Amino acid sequence: MVIAEDFDVIIIGGGATGLGTARDAVLRGFRVLLIERFDIATGATGSNHGLLHSGARYAVTDPESAKECIGENIILRRIACHCIENTGGLFLTLPEDDLTFQKEFVNACVNCGIEANVLSAREARHLDPSVNPLLKGAVRVPDGAIDPFMLSAANLIDAREHGAQIWTYHEVKGIIRRQDKVVGVEVFCHKTRERKEVYAPVVVNAVGIWGQQIARMAGIDITMQPNKGSMLVYGERVNKMALNRCRKPGNADILVPSAAVTLMGTTSIDIPFDEIANAKVTPQEVDLLVGEGEKLSPALARTRILRAYSGVRPLAVVGTHHSGRSISRGIVLFDHAERDGLEGYITITGGKLMTYRLMAEWTVDLICSKLGVAARCTTAEKPLPGSQEERVSVNKKMFSFPSLLRRSLIQRHGDRAIQIFDFISVLWGQRKKRSADKLLARSVLCPCEEITSGEVLYAQKELGISNLMDLRRRTSVGMGECQGEICICRAAGLLGCNKEEVIHFLQERWKGIAPVAWGDALRESEITEMLYGGVCGFKNESR
Ligand SMILES: Cc1cc2nc3c(=O)[nH]c(=O)nc-3n(C[C@H](O)[C@H](O)[C@H](O)COP(=O)(O)OP(=O)(O)OC[C@H]3O[C@@H](n4cnc5c(N)ncnc54)[C@H](O)[C@@H]3O)c2cc1C
Image (cartoon, rainbow, N blue to C red; front, side, top):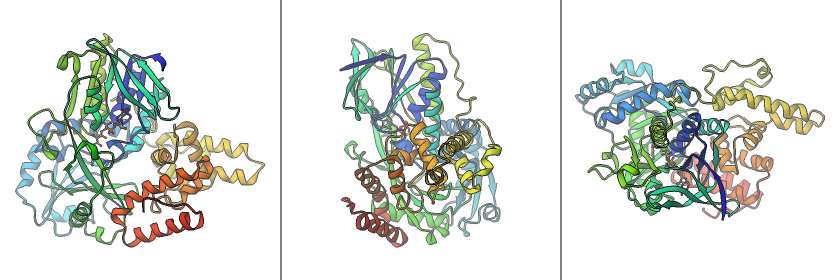
């Protein structure tokens, strides 16, 4: 057993909440360690709907969450602008919906501080021609789209650049207690198979839905309710604005435009704990999402579905409500010293992606009070890496880069695109004499998402990736229309990955394609199968 160095704070969980907490804590001067058992954003953070809530969705049923959302909506547009698309949102009253709800909805929005403008059906169709032409009316709100992978990566980069240690592929296996105090954690490294003990006066449980298990390791009880939500990815951007149904939150009532695709969701199904790791999208869910989606925007009927995916909401049971949509999406912060008489241990859970920063702020405020430190939170003012310049002024050197590649690089990395461009230029310069290598740095590796080999090499060197799946989360390689068919063998060759990794990547992609494997999605996956199975001799065991 290796005893690692000491820290002020250990954070367990590399989702948005843990990463945001690591960033906030290190900016306030703490020595921080974040421990994540896989890669960052592999829990709910990497499998949600990507709606930048204005809070309108919760204004009637959960005003506390609605107020948290609108507050953070305004802050995130400032500090994370490169992760956000300011699409605006419409709450549509469809022919089968009750138009009288609109009044209650608008009043509730106004009470929560959310701007809500009633529009006629004609005005709504003018703003977004994709909406159901039979709609009865609409309300415009400041919803938008947010990219959870970019947001997580930006928090990781900033935390690391300020001195935080981020240990991915490390799993917490035990909590170390001395009498009534938590003093550290036992960790297992999946790469080296090594066990370590790490110590800190404060340990933060930020593992989302797995919070119940991590709490139990310290001998205390919290109750989480795993609640699955499934979504469909359509291969084109159908709607201009985020579309919601103007009614109490229900199943399959949100359509979010996100970069080049459209995300339709979600369902809400309580599941047992042992199904979390393997939560599957069922045919019934696909049918529901397809049918309800077409009611919001009939053009979906003519649009190819790329894949289906699901995530599990980290809902904490604190009151009397014990299932899915009735549990508040509000933030839950437990100081276990106060709640259970156990010092040095904090749980932060519930909330939304939207409220990750606020969750982090509350957590670090509590850490400060425990450690007797008076440091102010600055994360509401300090932009994240990538968002430091609101409009990335394309620096002159970048004009030598083809405009499509330049635009997509900026879209993914904001102002950090310039660093990546410099990295690519150095590669280009270093390899000047050998023409094949020279071309490599700027060659297009992923044509769907316009990603160069140089960007992939940058991700390998600077963005802490360990495999092809991590590469997908940092750069979008494999997320486009072909779902990895063209790019993944190129990426594997470039990064030196073996056959098993390629198969694993394709199997993971297939899991999302299988529930919607008809028409073009099926045809494309047959080509992938032929290429990798027939030409390369790889076998996809999961088919
Ligand atoms: C279907 C669905 C749709 C959603 N839509 C939206 C939306 O549109 N907008 C929005 O704002 N929010 C949305 N949410 C909510 C949002 O995704 C979550 O609230 C948020 O991502 C939770 O982040 P987290 O960091 O708390 O948890 P997670 O992202 O789940 O992170 C927890 C991490 O802890 C790690 N971990 C677990 N056990 C251990 C261990 N023993 N050791 C080390 N690490 C461990 C996990 O691997 C994981 O990476 C949605 C959620 C779902 C499921």
